[in-house]
Length: 555
Image (cartoon, rainbow, N blue to C red; front, side):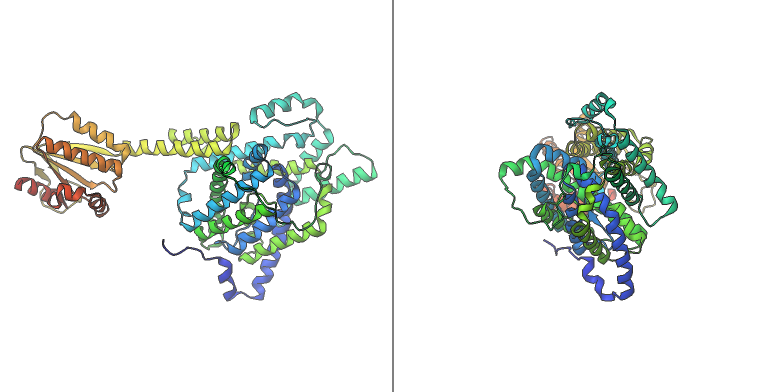
């Protein structure tokens, strides 16, 4: 294996680091830490865990991602993208099942980085990314309806359609105070950027609504507004490491969910790092970033953490406030730790409706509805992938959506690639005009009697192999020599190679000779390794059509 591509940005930061840079990073880290507070709590609760578990994830995973990461400004922690998959795992396998799945995802991410798959992640089709992101956004919005309107429900159904059915059945139990707090929080978040670019609207909404809730409850005796403290017991202390019971049956059952967490974490973190590169002008190391993400998800679950990845909103907040090195990310984690230890008990006064309002805004920002709308004007295959991934994410779950979406995108790509690849037959004349294969004065080459020239224009892979077979079988008279021009074949796979071998053996029985023309170096290497080159004879693999026709004359 080639040398490990692991170069944390932090280790090279100290070469030219100075007091001025530290003060800038310090300010950015403090602001990002404050911004991350409500989000970490909200994501934790929405995922089905306690608020301090959301904070612990932001602290521990955020610190590791900044310490080992390949991006200079990436801020890691729990994100909205994981809410759906985390909630589903907890419902089926419990908290320990989630921890095991997260550890497994961490190992998968580590292996992705070690085997340098950082760039491959970028090849996941864009309609799939938009489809599941929009689906997650709608699902997050759906999960917040109960708290946003203060509905009285014994339990909330797990699936999307049943949720909305239950909401409409309980519409008469709306808590008007909770609804006012929820909608008021949304309005505050929307309006705040018009007055302040530095202070996040979510923080303003939480402070205002928490103070209002505290005054109403303790001074006016109004207790109808549910708060975090009514639902959770806040433990403001350092977490202790836990042991996890791994077994083959558990690993087997959780592998699809772990794979989804890993792929989703890789996509979101590398997307966030790429967006950050565009703003800062720096260039992240994708493989190092994956290793850092893997380490964070491998360690955090032992302390009660949930899946974490790079967070675009917090990363952009870091950049906008002057953060330019991983030091800012480390400071953000320390700020959150201090808040947990010294201000943790105060979080119990935060209204649940306010957190629901925060997550409604998060879901709106995630929805990318403008991009979704724009993609519906693309090709039918892109629309099919987009809609399928979206609907599967909403109606079923993210694991199925990503698997089916990738499979559908692959099948449609193969279909398009096979349609692009053309196979033509020439019997009397080869037209050389506008070819550019080799410079000759003549524009046409005459093909001797008994010789046929076939040209494959495009990749020769399993999607085209059948077309090649059909083309051969459809021809009537049998020639003495078949010249197969492969100058426009960029690569050949095992199925294409098998078809060539089958054609060779069939031709041998019919006493027909095979000559290959214009084979590029990569394809030639494949032919040599497979033994086909020695089977057909190196003399019968020619560099261009002129040599091939000359060889045909010799035979």
